[in-house]
Length: 155
Ligand code: SF4
Image 1 (cartoon, rainbow, N blue to C red):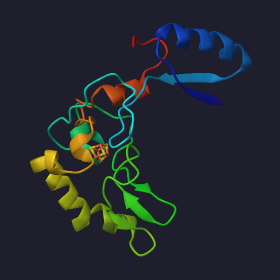
Image 2: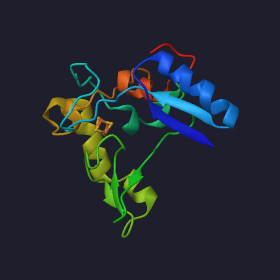
Image 3: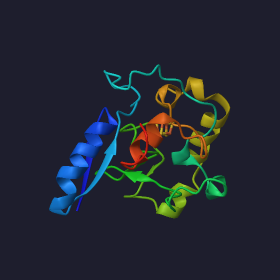
Image 4: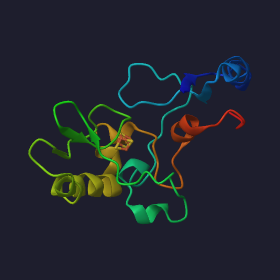
């Protein structure tokens, strides 16, 4: 069983690890992430949207130099079947609907292609993605790496 906890300091992660591991839990930790359009920015960082297509929308070739744990070509599905690009914002875009389309159609579809093209060419104009700090594969940014940091990694 895994626990996932937000901590502000490495010492807090180590303290929780010492408590949880003897009980058989596998503790994972992360710092605060920057979530676009959230009313509060808990990271303490000024949010800068990087150039380029974010890691959630990257094609498999983008991971040749920076493998991403085998999780490529991800699509996220809402309870009503709407397919959205990521889990960082509830609806950064709508790429399709699994009630009426196949996964393969959505993956190769015009909505996804247009969304990617806009992110590649004019990301600042995008309402949500223009205020998101998730970067491309290999340069994912501080929110992404915070979410993956194992306890032994410095914060
Ligand atoms: S909100 Fe961020 S993570 Fe989600 S698709 Fe836009 S840039 Fe990518």
